[in-house]
Structure formats: C-alpha cells, structure tokens
Length: 145
Image 1: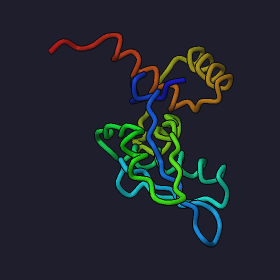
Image 2: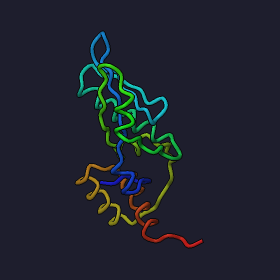
Image 3: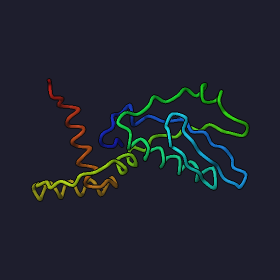
Image 4: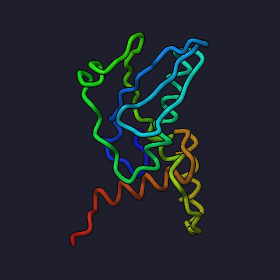
C-alpha cells in the first residue's frame, strides 16, 4: 500500500544500513547515505526494527531523498565484523513522522461512513486515507502550467 506524498518508485525504495556489533552486546546501526540516521538494538531483529523507524524519521524531515548507494560501494567500506543490510522504506512511518496541519473539512455523512468503513478494513487512519486519495487524484489530474 502506498503512503501519501510518495510515488511508487519511492515506495519500493530501500537504503543500505551497516550493522556493527558492540562489545556490550547488540548492534549499532548507521546509514551511509543519510546523515544522523543512527540507532541500535539489543538483537539483530530489534536493530532491524529500530533501523526501519529511524530511516522513516530521517526521510520525513528531508525535502529530497538522497540516492541510495550501490551495495558494492557500501560493502567495500565495511569494517571488521560489520554487516550490510537493506532496510525498506516504510511509507506509513514516513507519513506518521511528517509535520501535520489540522484542517476542518466538511463531507457528506454517507461518504464519511464509507471512508471510515474502508479505512477500518485497511488499518489506515482517516487523515492518511484522505491524504493518499488527494495525492492520487493530483497524480492522475495534473495541473498544466
């Protein structure tokens, strides 16, 4: 499922992370392509979850996403004991972290009921669904300048 504000190409995007075992246990995670995208986890699984979260947070703050490095380039820079892992962009998390502005919108009650029924079946929030619908509409009906 696509998130609002993202196109399909961005939705399929991932970034390479470097996992470094730490002496105290667990893993330190960094993204070579994204400054200040740093986290850690006590286990490999937790490190992956935390990496997914920090990636979404950092991307939500960037006006333009950086180009992802090639695996060969990152692999060549790995230190002893480090591992490389591809972390997919979770567009729902990116949406959650993006700055929001509250607006007042009036909709017919029957239409709002349909929206709420649909979003309940998909697990989306009302704002997320409406934002995605607006984004899709604008993509399909571009304004000609």
